[in-house]
Amino acid sequence: MTGLRAHHISKAYQRIEEVNREKTRPTGPGTIALVHATLRNALNDARDQRMISFNPAAGVELPEYTRPEVEPWEAHEVGAFLDEAATDRLAAMWELIALHGLRRGEACGATWEGMVVDPATVDDPDGPAGLLTITQQITENSGQHGVWPPKTRSGKRKVDVDATTLGSLLAHRVTQEQEREQIGAGWDNGTLPDQAGRPVRLSGLMFTRPEGLYLPPEWVSARIQQIARTAGLMGTVRLPAAVNDRALVIGVRSREPVGVWTVYRDREPLVQVEVTAAERIQGNRTRLALSGPLPVAVEPGDEIGRALLSRRRLHDLRHSSASIQLAGGIDLAIVSKRLGHSSPAITGSIYAHLLRPAGQRAARTVAAAIPRRRPDVPTTCPRGSSGAPSGSSQTF
Image (cartoon, rainbow, N blue to C red):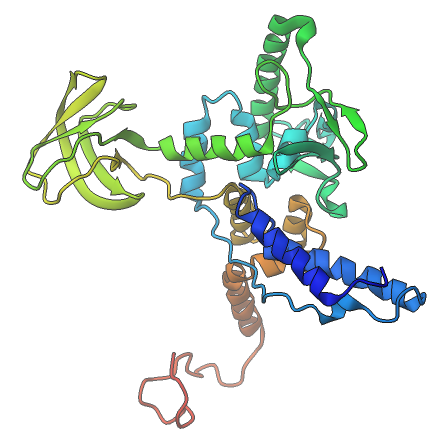
């Protein structure tokens, strides 16, 4: 420890950056900053105990880190995703993530033992609700899986589940029991190491592979992207089409083709077309007859659909739960608790840009509650008025 210097620490962080280029889930700058803070505190303790004469971590400069602004799914996108996923084997899992904000590892580690019907809602006219206790998560690091406690101390929590999602979970359990009966004695959730490397035999997992083994978190991410991609999709263009062509050739189609559709390129709308007829052709393809000539050229890989979902990360699906709750006026502290954040301050920092409407409502509420002697005070600043300071920016 006495030989540790700032350049050693900097070199270690550089090595992390090199490894990041080879990993599918790299260590982000925020995580590196947390690692550095932990190391700096540990070395401060060592200095205070005179084990070292100075703290080498104090001389390390980290690249400036700004938390990326989250881009949650819109409510209609969440609805389109869940409608598409309704027939998926793991439909109930997608509801837990999208509606109730579970992390992917928490959903993979959720157990039936942690799921109960909330006794306070048994007589609710909308049906009984559920209460899910989160106690563990399945983790992934460089392809290695483990079973760890939740990400934060607050991650160990009870999550209220609505009656509809509870119904989906109960239906999923029936299906899982049928799968388990077919597999018989071979049904096994698997064994994973805990944080200390000790083997833990998994049991009672809510969501598994058909043979009973635990779900890898990275598979969950990939599967959500697959479902998101097919939501609203009719087919993918296989042959190029020139301007003024009156037909498009697509691969396997998943919806009745006759009607008005949008052609997308890189998930951005390109042109709207009307399909009047469809004909199966060689190679498991379909030729779509159009009502008029194409105004633009269409390329292989372009997609035909309605309201296709833009490319999103799984985390953004979890974020959508928070944004919808905040937009609905749910208290920040409650949202923070449901998401398992360590404090409401963390939630506020992540969703600061989503809290502006709530702040604006608060401002209007305060202003309306205060009696004024001059009720005719103007609420806007007319352009060109002398009320604004010279050189100031008039944005009213």
